[in-house]
Figure 1 (cartoon, rainbow, N blue to C red):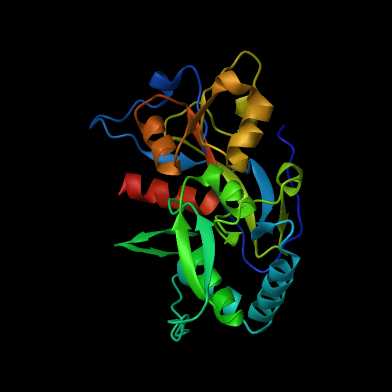
Figure 2 (figure 1 turned 90 degrees about the vertical axis):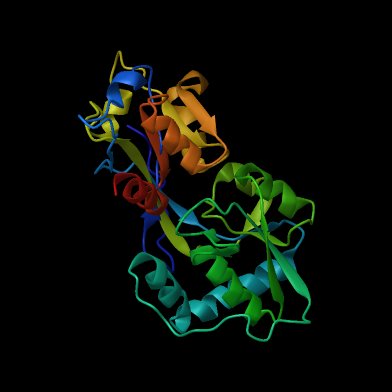
Length: 274
């Protein structure tokens, strides 16, 4: 059974999303009589993990400032209000970056294909991380600029100074800590598994069943990708540039399941099944 990363619950309510697939993908993804493939999220969790802001190791002053800002945003209820807006549809009247023009810029690296954390609304990047970063930038008296890129480019962008910090539903792992520093956790995430409604995969345990070689779809560079390759081997993990591409591979029968954070998983499933 996959080891759970049981980490300390921080500011925000739990989120997560998972993708994975197998060598019988064409059969398990078969659609109904109308040919449409309905999707569902397994009830059992694949992993539990912490989300935090990543900063270059040498940038200790920025890390300290971000931690202080997160502490204040948690204490006054702003952090929870931001989360509730995207998770529970509870609108708030908070305004961020209203007077940011002319201020020194601070750049956030992200991958804006991860709803509800970061995604496009027209030409604007919105979501939990985008709004939380705006609130942090206000605390730091800076103008936030969001740099959209591939997920696996975020750490390099922060390390090289192209971006000041990274937020992308990013999990704290020992491997990443070797290259960057992390703030205190601002969210707890759950990695979930998406499968077709009629899949023979009914629980996470089924992925480990003897004699089964399900193909797993993942977003390249995410913890779901890392965990899946560790658990099932590189030959069973199909890596995609975005969660959406992984889900499309599931729909077309190229993989048997997708492992991804739970909240994005819910968004992808809802969009597909409507």
